[in-house]
Length: 464
Image (cartoon, rainbow, N blue to C red):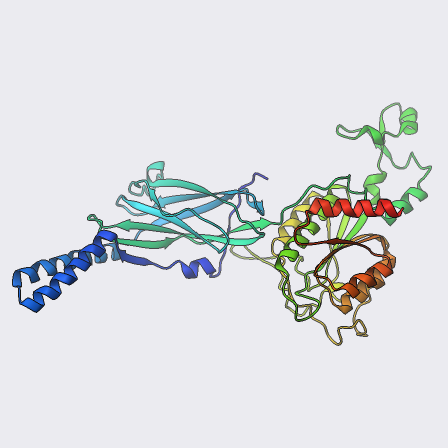
């Protein structure tokens, strides 16, 4: 992905609160102040007027330098962009910053450093070339400098980058001052996606219930589902009887009409045992595994439903003036799981980008439950309300009794039913899922994603 994108936060951010104006003496200025203070004490003690004059001079000069850098603020404009606009966790993105002088006087002897949220390493302070006076009607390269650096965020998330800190010293190098310039921008780091073997349907033993129904209904209706050949169509889809009748190459359209479906169930709760830890490492791998399976299925032509066991966080973002993206608040009264929120559906290349982008913001949350958490709540929506039998893949970190009951009830609508279970899951929950017919694939926080997928395929092959 090679696009360039920068998103500006309209509200206060953590980096902007931390990036404060800084005024301090340099090492040389600190030496002046230290020596001056010592001489002042000696001169006062021994009543040495000449020494007192020298001490006063040593104290006055760096103090005046501090005042100089304090009362000469910078007038600059800063823009920031990322390439690519979103980056998978563990890969590099290039941050490019354009700095323009808005003052009628040149700016010389400046230094710059960027600020970022915790988890993003930025380079230390570096010199900035001199900027010519601002050209009001003809902005040019002389009054603008472009700097860049690379970041490699290790984990997914949305990281505020900025504001830029620009510093300067006085002519004698005795005092240094820094100002925050510009607004922070958000770098979206998506979960890492591991390519999985197969064509998207190898582990599903079919292409979904709707595809099977259409294939049986239209077994002999070649004329109805044939169209002319277009460049890029695979030759395996050539409809030879229709080609012979029309005198030109015709291809089958049944794949476009079938809309195969699949379902991913993602455990986004904080812990089914109530007092357990957050399982951060397992949760991050669960997100990566879900993202990899989702991309694999979407690339295979599936329409994908994603069910979160916690309150839904994958709803489309709402927009507000100022180009701000406001994600759905998981705590606005929704209940989540198979007992509340409806699944969120994705399809096609646009759906792939939307899902991966949304997964960057997903966090562990407490599942909001009204009533008892034992699956007996009469007001909760039954898992069977999802309605159709399609391939289902559950990624489970640590689920409670209610979610276990819902997955057991859902088993009849899943073919196949594959559950990737971490070692943080309770033994009784795994046993109940296995007894209900879920194929439970064990994994730990160190299990590679492709190895987990391969293990699922191997286990299915052995049970056929």
